[in-house]
Length: 114
Length: 112
Image (tube, rainbow over all chains, first blue to last red; front, side, top):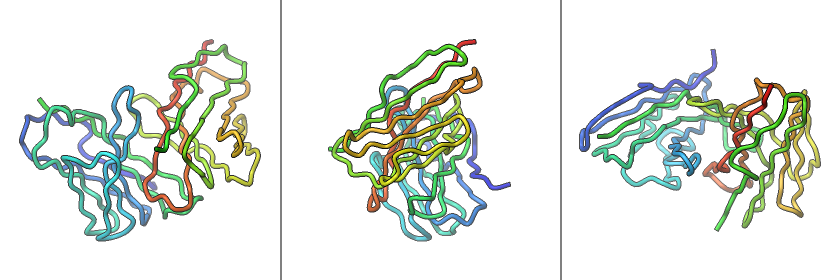
């Protein structure tokens, strides 16, 4: 089944403890992206990747890192999480950046930083 | 700066009626516009795409219009059902932007 898989679904951690949220897609998509969603603020893009070894900042990249060593994986790294990074995170992918390439989203990771 | 607005945060309608959701954008020249549905706690799911040279697009009970003069897209659900209750997001896109930006969404509730 074609899908975007994120892990974990739920994560509670403490301030400053490094964590990684994994994202994997099995559709051979070139484009991958991370979003966070907060009440009243909607979906905001953190980082995106046009292809392997190509990443770029979205609208809210501070406090996050990403890497794209393989086409299928796009992990999100929080080196030193803070409470303001408590949010619902989504990974998404699309075949390309072309107009007829919709985004496919994972089921989300709900992160709580205490 | 670029801005995307969706008519209201929440919309309640009676089952069987037509729901109309609005997406307005400023400081954008989108070549196309996508609509997504999001259920609580789940990732958005793509519904429809309309290009700037298309006035209207239909898919089953869904209809989308795109008016580049008004800088607006309308999303209609005819014969609405309680199962249509969800948040609907619009995403205008130009041919050059590499970041994929969404509107804030409208939460639709279809009452039985």
